[in-house]
Length: 268
Image (cartoon, rainbow, N blue to C red; front, side):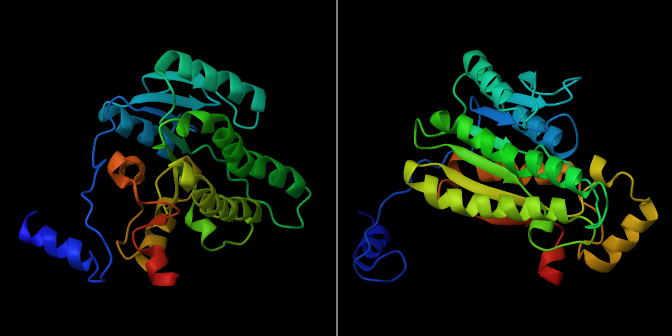
């Protein structure tokens, strides 16, 4: 054994006696050939995520309610609030591309609704059905495939709204706090089966959800609140998702990762 490794084995990797040196395995930084299911892949971050995995030679199953011009190796129309459709589509994906290795839950809606609005109940129902219950249904359906080799990856897309709050968006905010809690709980539950569960919390990103905000207001917000002084791009979020899903990220589990240009670092 080389002298350095002998010292580590004798004294422990953190300097504590009793630890034993064990060479790191499973350090691949390639997702080539992995079957990656992405929901909400028609536009914005979901589309960028599908494109980034595709560029790394993964077999991408892109799904969305809007099936027009979807990216991916193969694609399917999918409403994540429809359990029967989820069961059928996951089965088709497995038959077409193989067992699922990575699930990226990215389907989402945002419906502004003051608490006293007549439309609040509808906004609440739709938002929770897509943004939280849909994630649960996707995970439950894909789980037999994710556990098969003790190396599955689940990446849930939440939001910095899951770490804070904005007025008049309580259904959305509650759904994203729920995704954060779901991620942490399932990281503990599924870790013993070798499945990692992590959560990405994008901040201000140029997507369809933010398209209606005037550019001047975006610039003002970014200058005041984001240390990088700009909105992010969907591709910047997608690159973090890819990193979390790598085989080499095998000890990253239960992490809640803001991708927000430093917004939460500045304001908590």
